[in-house]
Length: 306
Image (cartoon, rainbow, N blue to C red; front, side, top):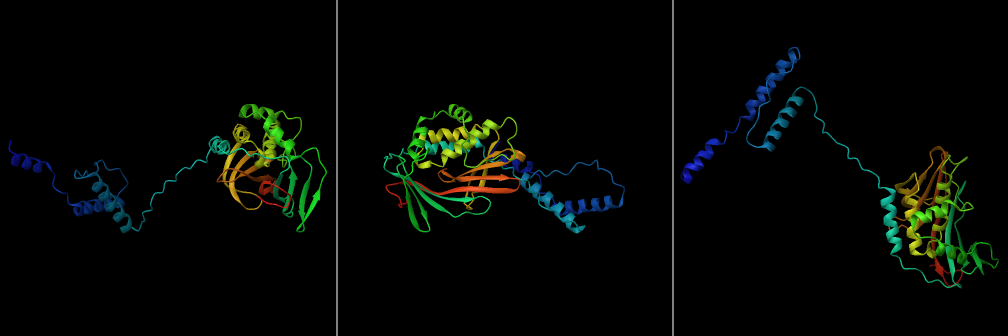
């Protein structure tokens, strides 16, 4: 068969372009007839257009829109909601752990000072305050009314002691979580449960509280220990992530949430950039209390800021 004959044969197999306008009139006539007669399903199959799937869909949509508008109806676009699942605690806290582990460990001298600027929102806002503590416990200072007030009393807890505790913690998250669950005393920046914790959650609450208490001392936490604490948080039951959570000062961050139902809900707010600790918030019976770390770091003398 010659090329000319082959082309002619292929052309003959292409169906004629259907008359869309005639088909529209026919369908409208059927719709009018059907509206005045008892409703029954037509046994006639829908006409098929053989000259392109996209054009067939467009033609059918045009007929449907025209029929609806001529009979006083409207065609609303169908919007299918997209289900967006919140990120899991495991994935978010693993990213936080990786960032922490890649941080260079600080080399801190005993004669240096840890500085913190904090705010408290406990039954009414309290003034923001700045304080310094010498690493070896041989001095402390607080700024009051613009003036620096010095002290020398060495209490049972001081930065170097806390640093030694942190350096002695296991870095494996399972072992670290077990350590916090079995602490002899409660360590927490703020109590979550009111009036009491649900049965069976007491050790989880103790571990959650202890991790937050130590996270406040970010500048002196060894990188591997910080990574272990993030991973341990992810292993506590009922811990979830709340995006765009706010701390007591309105700063947006990542909320690591321990939800105890009617007993209360505790938040640790992490910076969305590098995951460092911003503060703690507790929501209980419709009331919110919070404490924030606005700034922190290691300096050479009181009065200095990082």
